[in-house]
Image (cartoon, rainbow, N blue to C red):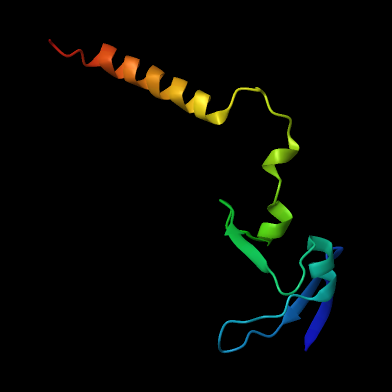
Length: 100
């Protein structure tokens, strides 16, 4: 049971909240935000105190997200990690030299 109100050119809709804190997001807002049921939404508060509702993508939607970009190197990850560890070790040894 919801009530639609028109105010200042923006649509508003009043929805009931159950004793368990549940509320139904009106269909037109779900469609606008791309929210599908079952699903999740993120509520976040801005510095101004406004509450923003955002769609949370499912893991299946995120699958391959990082892989869509082209690789910046053909070097295997193990080689990159090995080089980074060696670089970190050298920097640490330069900062804290050990006497032998």
